[in-house]
Image 1 (cartoon, rainbow, N blue to C red):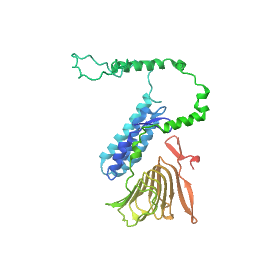
Image 2: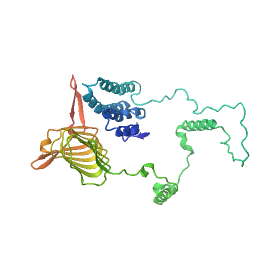
Image 3: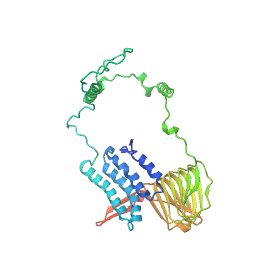
Image 4: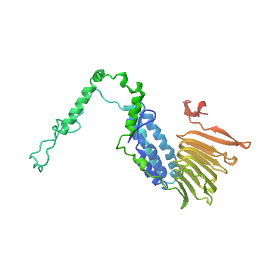
Length: 371
């Protein structure tokens, strides 16, 4: 599906099926591999990106690197095949960037003086023997257009279109003048009438998304994984009986609050909006992805908090968790609140960086306006 980007450039939204496959296999040992593919596959849409397709492909490559680094960490010392896969996969986007830089630096360029493309439809050849006549019936009504073969009509339409385009500025000479009393921007009554006509038009079909029913809320322990899914306006969610080997996966919860007691292995927040999470101790990682408006409060300790593709995230640390690492990528409006004198002081996480070459290596540091 082709979709216009927010910055005015085009991109291909190819990841719907791949993203769904990834989510169905979240428990797989190859989940990081699947994530690397699903996050970078939109790079194939560079053909629809104008001005700077190369940096667009690099952006997708960086998104894949976030997950391939995890693959290297898990398998670098145990299975060389995964390391070779990472190098081979990332080389696809590197070679694509090189190709774009060489041939299409500012996007695809269409030749104005090249050969004329052949007709889209070939003219049907005459059959050797005419088919038997159809059974008698009411005589059809023919028009001049119906008497032409489909290929001739298509060729004629294309010829008309290019003939009109070749007129240049003269194409507007055939337009009729509209008097002031018929212009809607000068007559509010005409605008309201047109709006009412559109609203009352019959045959309106609801979009398929509107017909999709909401999924049933779920809070249950499945093996070693707590599943908290599809809650709306629920502020008393709690997981109390926890064990160190368990993980918590929170998906599709909006305008809700969840409290987790005890010590667990890890927490994943995926595709949630306006979610509040309070937990005591995590020995692994707390990961927030594809979410918006998340408030996270640590009562005990946590070694790592990862924020990826998230807009708006407030992290309240405890005095015992001040040493934790906060890793962010493709996210905005992030703040970390540090306890000071029985109150919290807010510190923004930088979103903008400056990179310079110091003669031997690249040096990157946050810009001042990023906080």
